[in-house]
Each structure stands twice: as structure tokens, then as C-alpha cells.
Length: 325
Length: 289
Image: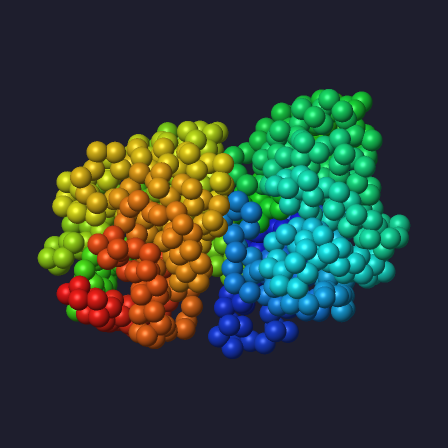
């Protein structure tokens, strides 16, 4: 049977008053009614709830929903030496925005950013919690570089910093680490740089399983070479990146995959049987028992109730793959 | 609620008249969100739960669940109400078809182009109705314009459907995008006037406009609507003077970068006062009054 996982983000708030505690908390912090420690307690309650939902639905490999992240770029990059965060910039083709990291000098890792949050999440989950980090090439591409004047030079220094962070997560006990490089769906020619950067990260991974995930589009032009990237598992967006499917079906994969078959950007509900049938088309070409099915990207682009529905569909589809395998 | 919304609309119309704005807006006091307001008044849609935009800001998105149909006028009665308060022209304001599509979930069409063109057809009827109600200017808001560069031909086609046959002056407003990537499309947009956020991006498009002239009017944003900082009149004058080095006065309209709803009432008022004072000072200096 194929396993189930999520990609990273989970909706922070829902429709009920209880599900809006984090939104209220941030508002109260902004008004000076509470302090940072109070907000962190609220964030952690939300993380508990997000983990409980994933655990109850039966997702095999979960995340903390990246609840404490302001966005995918500034949360980690903003805590490195020589990086400040600036104004809002549109995040790929979504209607969401990130605070743009501005690089003023040589970037360097200072201290663990994610390890405490990961330890808290793992202590509150019945199944392994995957640590998720934005990859160095995406970070470099979306930052404003006022120092290196070279994407490659910045990306490789960021890779060293991400590697240090991965080391701290593995030391804390993380058994699964995922590096997100959505930039590959826009700039497939960055694959060589992504692979070089991943080599730096891989040296810190210890015994953990390292996943390289691409989303917001297809990787068809580079699919065959992507298999040589220094990662244990490849994650693919097969919804917005449906153009990858014919290449994947033709060539298969020597590495286990995360098959992003559930649309995480639209509320329309998939038929679990159709998803299972699609996954089973790869039988013999992909090691399905070592692979996962997942949403196509993080779930924060959906309302909370719809995200939950999508996870139920994901779980049902995986069970049907098991029956059909 | 309607009474309060009318009161707020009247107050903003009076304020705009009082400070000397030439072309007014109704202030959209009755719209919770620019996309959901239209969706709530279109058959074939539902409204989703909250999704995040950034930070602690969330919004509800339309969900297309059936064929899109205009069940009747959407914003016409508010336009009529606002226009009755003033002798100056009030703009008819339409959320554009591409933005409506891009900001909606789609459970019905299964094609971004089909959903976009379905919005375009019904929004054309709304534009015609606004014109029939007396709108001399119809503005199509397309903040999602620069989301996917490969879909710019679709946007041009859809906006063209909305504006087809209108005698009113047509305006396309967009903001917070990568203008350099979409620049080549500016002259292809089927409207009379392009309304751009300029001050947030440091007027950095001016050099390009110098090299590649705009063949239509420009509404030139001179006030940053996402900053608490109040631009002094002198700074706004500088921005207008820079605009005049590229655009002729007859093709240049001065406005804020975007809608002012994220500012406090006091901030909005003072930003607009400074903007109008700066425009007046520049007109006087150039003998344009």
C-alpha cells in the first residue's frame, strides 16, 4: 500500500471561533495586549490541533503545518547573518505574499531556527513529523541580492546554512527532511545548481530520509535528470504540473516518489478511486510501497474545512491503492 | 446596514468634492472584498471559508459551482446612489474577469480560460448597465494581471469583451505586479487609460515609458496606500513633475497607487488632501489652470 503525506503548510485558521485563536492572538500581540510568549503558546495549541487532525485522518507522515512561519522565505532566511526582510512580494502565481529577504553581506547560519518547533510537533504526533525547509536555490531566486550579485554564489552559501539547519534537525531526532525547490518549475535550468546545493545539504542529513519537492508546475523538461539529484525521494506536483505525468509514466523512477495527485489549490473534490487508479498506472515503474501520495503543494491555499476534506480523500485513495496493488 | 453604508458613501463623496478631486469613486463602502462582492451577486457561485493572503490577513474566495450568470445589476444601484450626490463624474468600478477567475476556486468549468471568459461576458453586461446609468468612466480592476505572464493574451481578450462597444472612458487598474514583465502588453490592453501603482515601486517604470511610449492615458499613482507614512505635498509634487517629463498633461491623471481601504480614515484623508494640493500646485506652476 502506498503511504500518505502532506507537503508542508496547513491552514492556520478555520471558521469556528476555536479555530480562529491564532488570528485573534496575532491581533492581540499587535495591539500590545499579550507578549510573544503568549502568542507562541497559542501557536503551539494550533500546531497540536493541526497534528491531531492529520493523525485522526490517518496521514502517515505529517508536518507541523508551518504554523509559526510568517512565510516560506523570510522565516528561515530572515534569521541568517546579513539578511533583513523587506516589503511584500507576490509568491509565485498565488494570491499570497512573502516578505522579501534582502541580502546585504555574506549569509551564514547562526542558530537553529526550526528544531524546537520540530521537537514540540514530534512530541505531539503519533506518527513521524517531517521537517520542511525552503531550498537554497528558491531562497536565492526570491531574495533581493545586494551583495553577491550572483545567484549561484548566494544559493551555495544558503545551501551551507540550510545544511547546518538540517544537521540541527537531525540531531533533534528528525527522520524525514524535505527541501522545497518550487523554482525548478519556473527555471528548470537551475537543476544543476539545485543538485550542487543539495550535495552540501546531504552531508548533514545523517540517517534521515531526504526529499526534494517541486511544486506550482511541471518538471517535464528535466524529469530524467531530476532522478540523479542527491535526494532519497522526489516529490512532484502532478496537478498544476500535470505535464510531468507522461514523462513519469514513460520512464518510471528508480527513487521512491511523493505523488502530488490531490489538488491543493482548488476546492473541487477528487474521486479517491480515480486517484488510486492513476497511482496504480505507475505499478511496476515506481516502487509504490516506498512511495507516498500527497496534495500537490502545501494546503494553506484552501480553507481549513476543505483542506481536511482533501486529506480524507487522500487517505481513501491510498487505501484503494492498497487494495489494487 | 444599508443605511450606514449609504451614510459612509455620502460622507466620502462629500469629502472628495470638498478637497477638489475631479473624478470620484463611491468608496466601495458596501464591498467586503472586491471579488467576493461581485461573486455574491452572480449566480453559480458560493463563498469559501477564509484563506490567508499574508501575515494575519485572510479573505474569502468565490467558488464557481455552476454556470456563471448575472442575475441582475451588481453595482449599478450603488453607482446611481453615489452619482446622485455629486455633479462631478463618479467612476463605475468593476472587478475584472481575469482577477475574478484567478481569485476563485473553480468546481465547474475546469478551464481557467472558460471561467475567465464566462466572467467577461456577464461583466460586459454590468459595464453596459453602468454606462446606461450615466457612468462616464468605467474602471476594470485587474490586480491579478501579472500573476501568470503566459495568460496575458487571455486577459487582453477578456477585458476586451468587457469594454467592447462602450462609449464611456475605460480604465484598467492594476497594482503590485512585475510591470517589466508585462510592459509589452500595456499598449495592447483594450482600454483608454491605464491606472498604475507607481510610487510603491519608486517610479522605476518612467525610464521604460521614455523609451517605449504609452499610447493611451495614464493614471499615475503618487501615494503609497500600504504605508502609514504620510507623503508631504512637496514629495508628491516631485513625483508629478517627474511624470510630466514623460507624459503630456492631457494624458496624465493623478491618483493614489490603489484603493485606500487598508489605511485609517485619518491617513486616507490626509494622503488625499496632500495629493490634491500637490496636483493643484503643479497645475498652477505649469499654467494649466
